[in-house]
Image 1 (cartoon, rainbow, N blue to C red):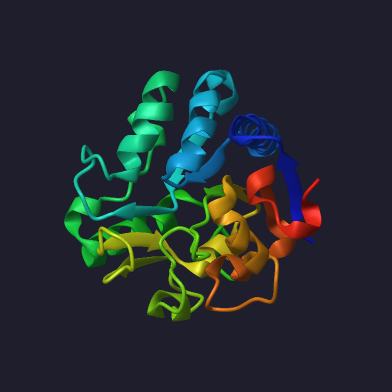
Image 2 (tube, rainbow, N blue to C red):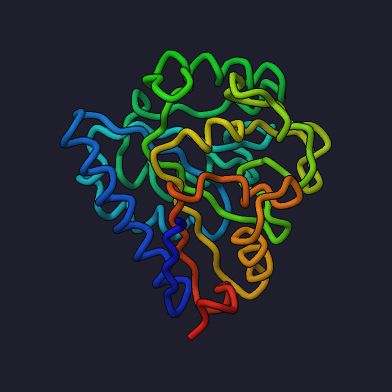
Length: 240
């Protein structure tokens, strides 16, 4: 069953999310000494990363991965890596040995191939021989997309053995992207999905409905999914 938490406003969402990430990773690190966290871009997660940066001690032993990337150089203003670097990596002084970025500048195909190998080399495989990330932070688009998995896109049809995909002709710019596969998202120990604003309310409603390729977020494993959203983005059944 999906765990759903509503907060009064976006700042409350960010505070709750940062605490949730820190608590979950602490438990993993106490068990294994290392944890693997994958991050998404976007305005909603950014504030969460800023708050995490203020508690850098909670990120000791945590390796940073990416859920998706735009095919642009890492210093481009559209780069997810740049957003994460500016809001979290640099302020928290997380060294490059613990940061595994998608090389968007290589293009969707070569970038995806390289990242798939990096995942296989860097993360233990458990479920169906897939690397298992400890937590993936996701946003949700108004169309219900997560990472760079868009409604009805062929990337949703990749087999369970595919870890990373090059995406072309994405319905929002830039059109070329790299994304973790749905199989990797579903194999993660936890997915944390954040949504703020009335523009996301319909997507959240659809995500909690019947699973469908038309709403990729609805295909996540619900027993491993935590959703934190503000009142404006809350589905009708959860509104105060």
